[in-house]
Image (cartoon, rainbow, N blue to C red; front, top):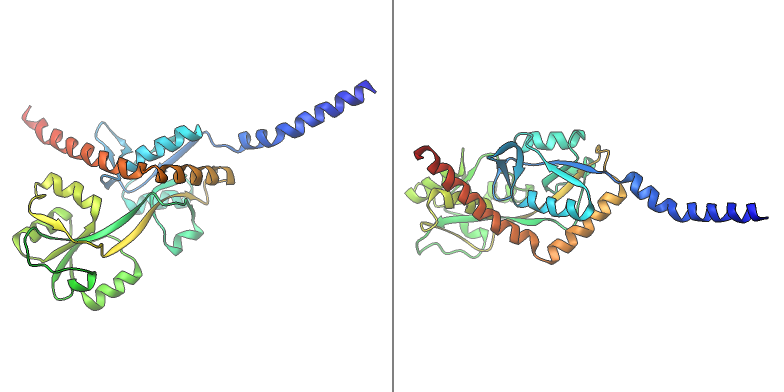
Length: 274
């Protein structure tokens, strides 16, 4: 009889412990993430260790990893296309700067809420005379964008019908053309443009028009082929992102990393003279 009581007690303890043991067994201790390597203030290569990515999204993932007691490493894997391929394959667990498009839903799970909205705005010369209330007002003016920048299909259709746009190789080239009067406006994501314009010394010569011509959400996304992709991880990522968004943390990190990027560029410019 005493043996039977002890056996029942042991089974009860095992039953109570099994959910916790299951969670612990399924929990990944290490996550590898990547993203576009030349997109400050969101992500860029660490000058001290080019194999790593730093920036606002890296800092965000660091906070999430600490809360989840999971080590998160954000590694350089090439340009945006290469980063996407690495996550698709499962060689890398997570994309730190994913744009939600229908085609990607079969390849990765997008974490909600989004990290931040990516606002493509029209940048014009800092002078009066450009009347603007919506993207329709860009019709009849010449515009420029950086080749390789991704818009959505709806905006592509609108632009092909209404706008006169020419691609350039780099934002610096587009901004120089704008200041010189060779183009009337430049389309580029707000924070990314702020990072580049600041280092070009053109902040007092250009201004952005509101409202944005396009807004797309940037998400964390976990590969379907990642060994770490399980309900526990997806649930915890969503919970933590909800808390961070409510506290305004992603916006704070964008502002602080804008300053971080600018200070690095000033430091690198001074280095050859030392």
